[in-house]
Image (cartoon, rainbow, N blue to C red; front, side, top):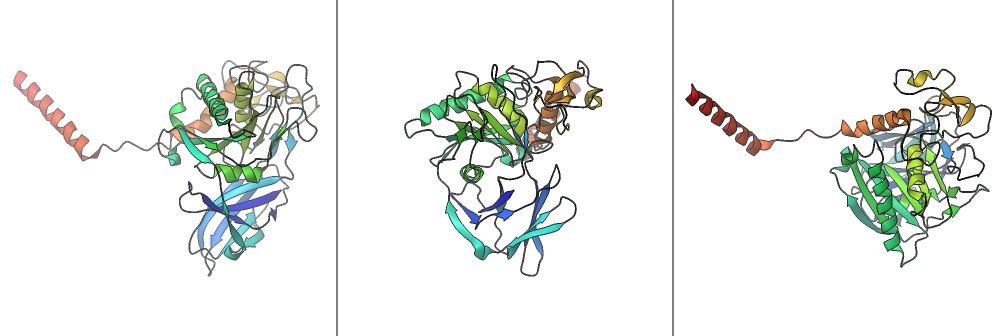
Length: 377
C-alpha cells in the first residue's frame, strides 16, 4: 500500500496544500491495519497525533441483470492518502504501524515537502452547521467537459434526492453538510477497469487533492459515463474520510441506487448480500454472519438466510436490501449499522446556548406567570 501524506494549512478550504515527495511503502498484514502519524518538535515533543484506519476492501459493482457477480478484493496495494494539519513548530513527522505493535515506518522532514495547488470551485449545497459536528459529504466529478458542469450539478442533486428518499438518511438529514467541487482536474477514472465489468478505478491522490477544498467525512465520485458501474473502498467498521464511493453518471437509469449501495459500503462498512459464488469467506461486516446469525439475534423481524457474499455466510432478510439488489431500502441490520454511525454525529451536536437575552426573557415570563397566579388567589 502506497501512502501519500498531504498537509493542509490552517484553513482547510485553502487553495494550497502541502504534499510530501514520493510515497511511503506500508506493508499490510492484518485485516484492520491502523497507522499513527506523530508530529514532533526538534526535541521530539509530540505536538499532534492522528490514528487512521487503512481501507481494507475494494467492493465490486452490484451485478446488473444477468451479469456474473464479482467478489470483494482485499486491498494489498494501491494508493492511500492521509491529510494532516500544519504546525509551525513541526520538525519532523513519524509514521508508525499499529498492526502488531508500534513500528516506525518512516520519518518525514519539512524540507522534503513541496507546494501543490488544488483546482476547482467549491459549492456548498446543504449547510446544517459546523462541519465539526456534522457528516460532511463532498461530490466530485470526472470526465465532465467544460460545458457539462450543469449536468454534474443535476447529477449531484439527483443523488441528494435519493438520500432524502432513503431511511435512515431521511430522518437524520439535519446532520448532513453536502458540498460539490466543480473540479477541473482529471481524476483518471476508468469504467470497466482491471478486467472487471462495471468496476471503476480512479487515481486516489487526485481524488483527495480535489476534495481538500472543503471539510469532508465521505467522498462520492460521479464518473460521467452511461455504462453501468460502481465501486467503493471500505474500512472495517465503516465511516471515515479514508474511504470513498464511485458511481457512473446515468441518473435516469439506476445510478442513484448504485450510489446508495456504494455509500453503504464506504460509510456503513456493509458487505454485499448477493452471492459471490464462492464457497466460504469471513464476515468482516455487520450484515453477514455465520449460521445461527448471533450478531442480530436480539433484533426483531429478521431471520437467518443464505447466502451473504459467501456460501457459508447468512443475511437477515432475503432479497429485500439494496446491498443485495437494486431496491429502495436497507434491511433492518444494515439500517441499524447506519443509524449507529449517524448517531455519532447526532450525539456530537452542541447544546443550544440560550444566552443572556434568552435567559432574561425566560425570567420575565416566569415572573409574569407568578403574578398572574398570585392575582387569581
